[in-house]
Length: 174
Image: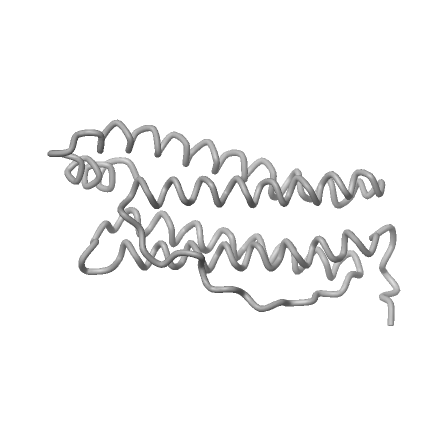
């Protein structure tokens, strides 16, 4: 049975929103794994942990926004299985930040693909929603991660003091 409020929501857009919900929940799960990695007693970089746990909450909040949006537009929410993170161990902060940057770029590409298809279908409401709630934040996060990677690369470049650089980054930057 189709919703009585459904208007100008193409079936492809409805499927795309459901796909984004799953991607955002998967991202939340992945950032949760990163946060817990840095909270381990053998890693113990608490600010890295906090940073990734905050990212996890942000991704989950964005998934919830998409869930609400789908219902508001009269679409049907179809939840999928959330796969386990592709990695469970990292070499350190720089490796984790680089992984996160690549992951965030992939998420951004998916959002842009949905935005492009919504534009082709003349769904200005979905385009505006994605621009307001996802694209700006995604680009800001990519910029922040890029800055962190640049700083970490300089701080950890020294073989003898690399771990100290990561420790100082954890204490003073994040």
